[in-house]
Amino acid sequence: MRITVIGGGVGCARFVLGLREHVRRTGSDDTIDVVVNTGDDWWLSGLRIAPDHDSLLYALAGVNDTERGWGRAGESERVAAELAAWGTVPDWFTLGDLDLGTHIARTAWLRAGASVSEVYARLGSRWPLGATLHPATDAEIDTHVDTDDGSMHFQEWWVRHRSALPARGFTQRGIELAAPSAGARDAIANADVVLFAPSNPVVSIGPVLAVPGIRDLLSDSRAPIVGVSGIIDGSVVRGMADACLTAIGVETSARAVAEHYGARASGGILDGWLVDETDVAAADPLRALGITTRAVPLWMRDADSSAQLARDALALASGIAR
Image 1: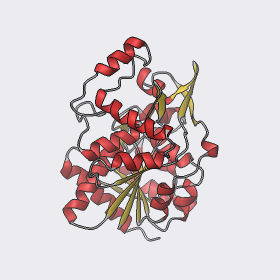
Image 2: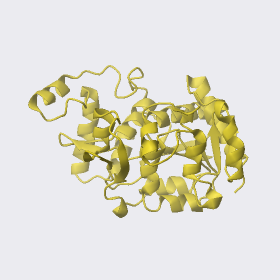
Image 3: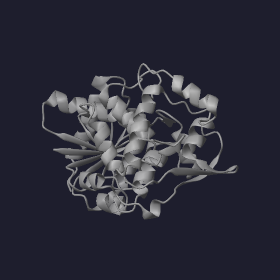
């Protein structure tokens, strides 16, 4: 079975780790593809930074910093301090030395003419990841945030301001000229199951869905499409997704996010939706909209709970006929 996951960031990384663990425990020959958000990417000190991709890469490789939740384990920051002394990086965005190695390699390949997809393949070949990562698009579609103080790159709004500046909206510059990468197209078109990770609906899932052609691929797919809520009992699991949802007029709840995605039968993207047991009340209203909904424990606390969540998502998908 070919399983395709769509998402980005730490929530997606934890979910894919659980999915990989589930596949390992079952001893199946299932394969995992991940279509990764590239809207978080940006240029800094002449280097191309790709936070969502790198969170997945490091987590699957087992070299991530689990305490901080981002970056490499055992990091040092000597180069970052030197860059700051020269004034080439803002003091609110820290690049670790090991992490810089990834960014330098990525940038060197890009400047030599490699596509983003080729860079993903080269970076992914270093470690046995147990999954294949694909950029949603090879085009640059950096997310910018419109605020009362003007437009700024998403990273500045997210990291520097901690989303405290009220946002009026989010745009991906150049999105109208983008197209799905070949890997993303193949992973969606030929999937047996498509799973939306519990990622930020607005800035991790949203930019992927905004790539022209992605929604058509999902609409045409014969695979069941199941999403996992990143909202539990009215609160975000991680990060500041509530600020993003508020900016687009969506309530911070598992039910509202599913309604935002919409039922595939009505032009949306979801066939099924997993909510936490604390949100069981959302199940019946969502089923009435055409989204098969099941309440299960969503907290990914360890390998066992993460693998169980993956198992629940696949079980829900298996019960949805297309």
